[in-house]
Image (cartoon, rainbow over all chains, first blue to last red):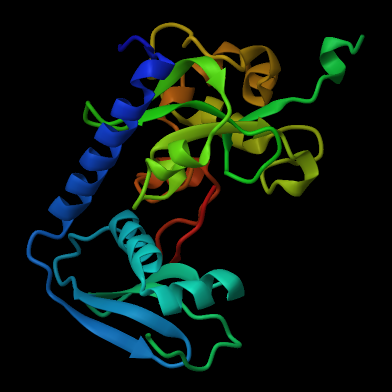
Length: 113
Length: 153
């Protein structure tokens, strides 16, 4: 069994950067050949639809991607979502995954600047 | 002087924005599974430190501790943290000795579950995105169904 790992404050930055790099690489590996369509179902949902017939993409993968989409949405969308409570999420069904973020109920439309 | 039992306890799996937040450590991804590398001294997170996690959520890169919110938290049943109970009961030990943890004397999980919590603590990543089914169950997340919603635990 492994021993506990401890780091110093001096190595904090390097360890954190390495963690981010590896997490992103692992996430990218989960979607080696993206097969997706951009979807927007006004007024509820903005995100992508992934064909997943072999069920290779897990709920955790999809939740991570949904968060990426939420975090990386265009500035106009992001500011609206952050102030009105949009929520990243995903739906599995019928051999595909819809993942992205749910628009707040009171947000009926937006304009990308 | 406050008695030990009266001290405010700390949550070792906290979110930014909670009270008295400190960085407990960094999620190291050098092995097969993410594991917490404990910081050797308590550090209050600065905006620059939190920004290091971008574009990932902070909780995927850092483990934060904060004041236990007790009744405001979904895991607190009025007397005990049920998340700590499930961790001690359901997860395997992942280290062979107690980690060098800066909050142990005030840690809710340690105060409640003792050494059993500490030997399992390093595998916890706040939030559930990378969690397998057992870990999701421990976190109190419903098992995978047709509909999944992102949720932080």
